[in-house]
Image (cartoon, rainbow, N blue to C red; front, side, top):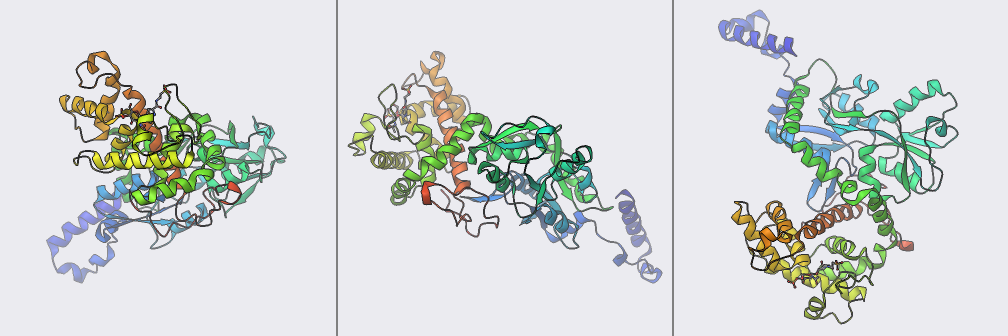
Length: 489
Ligand code: BLG
């Protein structure tokens, strides 16, 4: 790269100095190939190849999203160019595209920097550490060492770092056998284990964290080896211009907290739900939601609400149990107080349909009544907070935010104030006094998490989703990127 740049700058100096004589010399401008970075900037487009999966890139209610997408989008913004995403059918396809002339210039797909891959790409600095994990089906006997892999039906992705790992292991354990599949995605592998079609698979810890919520029977046997590093892959060759630029960007993203924020946003399911919570949610998604899905949809539609938000609220309130009752006498699937139920015309709070209708009507009313200065998406998070703690206490928290020089219209700021409503030092100065504001922060956070998950599960591309047999058809079956985008909130 350095040599190329030096050559270019010298050539330019010479060009300026010698003017048109240059043309006669035969060292024309045409001889100087632009670097990849220069091409990207000249075209105004950064072409990136990725995979369609919850851990990388998918479509949600607001359009394109995913950890890799968000990170690479910021890189494109930094470069001042448009981002153009394409999805590969499998990992081999991804590297082939990257190696193709006139193909995408960067691969961003949770790619482990493995020795085999380094021959096929120029990797950036690592931005995440992941651990390869052996995944088994709950109840089938936990594998705990390499010996337990022998004689098992193991499937991994073709072209994956796991296939490389198993190939290396096979040199020591010739009896080890495994299949490499190029027709599957990580979610498919997890589903196959979940349903007992294969005994074991290997998946990176981040992928499992992201997907645990969909597969109730999937468990980690053991970590196969140490943590590995994940980076972006640039096309191989002498031209390191894009790789250098990506490195500078990633280093800054690490320093200024961008990377950490994105990780929390996308990999936080297990952190927030807890490991047990994650697979309990998966179980309830299969067993309970189908009973109420239609009620949520019917209640949401006339009020122009997103039914998945209502469903997420219902899960947070009662784990989708119509007979839930709190110590304080709040009851039903949407946990309505007696007052709210009355105001919403709910006669029987324990009737799931009525409770969902009442909850929907109540949140729609709150959304309408909130101050106009609260804009989406924060407006929705404020509405959820008011649903839980009441509008009066929420107003107190907004006032505390203002007094602290924070922005009372930003959820991020007000959520810092809510826990203060439980501390005498603070609530004694408020108009409405004590309230368990910390719980409200968790309430909103959990609902947002469930909402994200429900959004992925109900992506429009999962058209072949069956609700037959009261079972949701889980994600990853259809790997083509969705054609439509769900309506924004
Ligand atoms: C909410 C009410 C709000 C009410 C607040 O309490 O209930 N929401 C609903 O009924 C849907 O109307 O605001 S107010 O009318 O302005 O006062 C505050 O009173 C319900 C909350 C309470 C909470 N869950 C919905 O999120 C709950 O169940 N608390 C019980 C906790 S414990 O288990 O008894 O400790």
